[in-house]
Amino acid sequence: MSAKWPPEYDRSFVPPPESRYWSETLEIMDPEERDQRVIIPKLQAQLKYAYESSPFYRRKWDEAGIRPEDIRSLEDFERVPLVEKDEIRRDQIENPPFGSNLCIPRRELARIQGTSGTTGKPTVFGIGRGDMERIAEAHARIMWSFGIRQDDTVFMASFFSLYWGSWGALLGCERLGATAFPFGAGVSGQSDRSLEWMKEVRPTVFYGTPSYALHLAEKAKARGMDPRRDFNFRILFFSGEPGAGVPSTRKRIEESYGGICIDSGSTAEMAPWMTNAECDCRQGMHFWQDIVYSELIDPKTKRRVPDGKEGITVYTHLERTSQPMIRFMAGDIAMWVTDTCACGRTYPRLPKGIYGRADDMFVVRGENVYPSAIEDVIRGIKGLGDEYRIIITRERTMDELVVQAEHVAGMNVYQIADLKTQLEGNLRARGLRTTIQMMAPGSLERTEFKAKRIVDQRRLYDAITEKA
Ligand SMILES: [Zn+2]
Image (tube, rainbow, N blue to C red):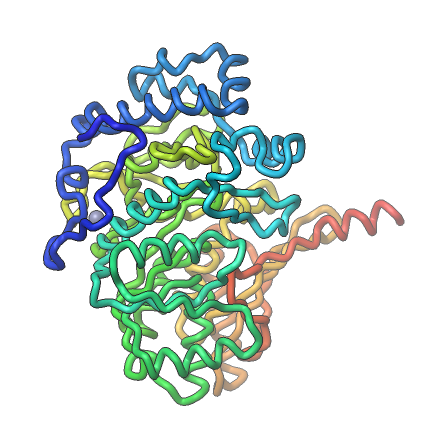
């Protein structure tokens, strides 16, 4: 391992196609040895760099009495203070537009990306030229582990705008040497045209959100196409939503297209973001620890949780010079295990994926509810469509959970009533008391991006009753 930081990669390197690994030594190394020889040296260099170049971290760590040179082990690293999403947002409001964590002169930025800002002021990302190359390298290496090779054509049915996801996939595809087909999404009529292109060009890999893949399959079937026969996808990989890690959603995608479904993605603040990703064995996402060091911590004690336990995600860049995130608390919920995957990689795995996005979880009658659990139940029932809504209302002081689900076409009233009973029962078996509303096929709005399936009307109820 070269001691140089940030690391320099040979941009012409691509493994032979039959090789399972891009960086075999690193990927199958004994984890303890990898920690000592690779991760800790990279972490120390990243910490030193951030302390010297980022007023944001210098201020934060000085207040906490932390010096980079004091961090000599991964246990020591737990003393480094966590960074919250709101802190980054506030810092960018006080120091517009990039905050006090840019670390490189503005003229060295290759790219500006950002969040959509649907839940407040958008966060601005400035990415340096060197970082762009390292992100491409990381994504190529990880996409290789899904099984993507130079012969593949990657169809990207996702927005090319502020949204970082699509660009990260494109960078990885280009570095790997596969053929990129950045089709995009979001323009009127584009879904219909994408079906024609997918049929005509026969790309072998699909990238987008799980919601959109299901929507396209539904559209194709309505037009008399069979996505298994008319398209040619052998790999479909996803980010932006937890769906690809939800068992019944994965099953629907794989059955619709006849290819394998791969879950990937951490969070917008992290680039590379594919350092959470499944390999072609699909046993849960790996944490690619030597690129982004990832932890699961107890939300109350803030201590790292042991093997087999559930915690919330905390990410640390190990080779980022433009806006490094160090112990960034994304807050998504997952459970990790450390046994070696069938692929031979020794990275920790999330066998149940990320099953609670911090932003999506809601509380009903004092219980935490994860929409992905409801999604798993709905998509596990034959006769129900792919789309659904979760509406939370309040009757007097009690929270009410309403689930709207579509039945498929051609059902009679008795069959629809049976579906309703079955859905209610299966949700009750998961501890959820719900009111079910059966909807006609196609009546719920479809999305080309991340679906908004949760409608919380409780604030509206509170506002009305306060006035009265
Ligand atoms: Zn694996």
